[in-house]
Length: 310
Image (cartoon, rainbow, N blue to C red; front, top):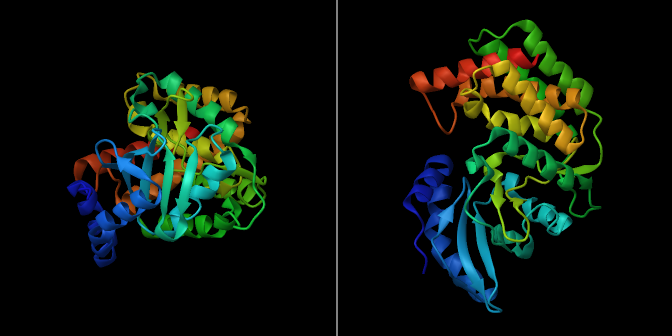
């Protein structure tokens, strides 16, 4: 029976409370059941992401794979649907799934993420190329994949509520630009499958291809949206740039070119993500900082980036 890492237990219980504690208590038995059903044996150190346990395994035919079991949550429902639609195109392959248990048997990639590549140009270029490959026609349902356009009303409501309730120094023109993006780009979007949370930690080194995507949300909408998710994830790396404006605009240029997307559209989604992050940090903090001077510093940088992108 596998041992669940204590860090994963702690973060799951902190986030999910009693439901999380009950789930992690059942997790070793659930993993054993899935290993038996899919004829696999543990083959390495058990790791985890934010919401999923990752067990390296060896299949009966000798092939390497990983068993991923995620905490049951609406945001995880369509991950296997995205993998199935891509069938290995720019993402790890799906070998088997158990939707009731939020479990998948997946192609094994290396533990090295694109975030560890070090070179900022390489990071945004690789992510842009993967974004282009992952942008395929949305599969016909069922199941019906979630549409980004259906989130527009909530985005607009949250931006207005945060601007009204939270102490901040964002100029009106910055908030107005984010709201304009939601209204003008959000309501009419293509029927295209997109990752939905594309960032450098969700892109792994692999054997079959140099880099493969993991942890998709499986949204349908504008591929330029993920240019914003990527840039948001590069906040702290951008802080090291000698010329922030130059670094930000170079990242946008490289991503848009590699993804074959309209650069202005990518920039507008990036600005929206920056404003959203600035408010999110004030209300909830970030995973890397829940409070104190470090959080204040990151929030100020999010404000600066939002203004820079406006």
